[in-house]
Amino acid sequence: MDPLETYRQIIRDVLAEYTKIPYSMGELECEAVFDETRDRYLLMTVGWHDDRRVHYCLVHIDIINGKLWIQRDGIEHGIATELVDAGIPQSEIVLAFYPESDSPTETLRERALTDFALC
Image 1 (tube, rainbow, N blue to C red):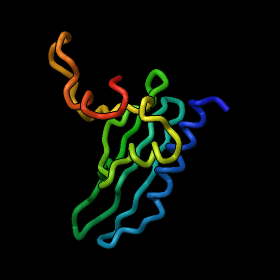
Image 2: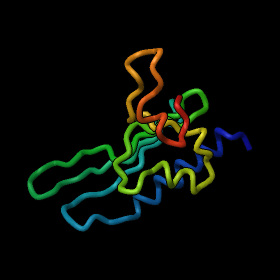
Image 3: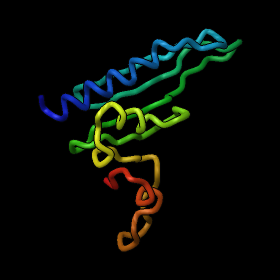
């Protein structure tokens, strides 16, 4: 199977598991949103808590140039860990929520301190 198809399936499977976990407060639910045409994958919290509307992105993953770019990670233990445990190599995952260097001659900041891909 094509590695990208494998990555897509792993992302779908990992995110879908979160939709099965009920919230303990409010009328909230977790929704997985898959845009396979543009390779965008979201995990959203939606619903009502008391009289407030809740609409919140928990996880946002894009596939860009064959790598998984984690744009947002609101999972306590990190969605990247789950993706690695499911079979995606760290070298194929970019923690995009960490900033790059301001200077092209300077090394990357936080991304360089992880074992994940720089870009």
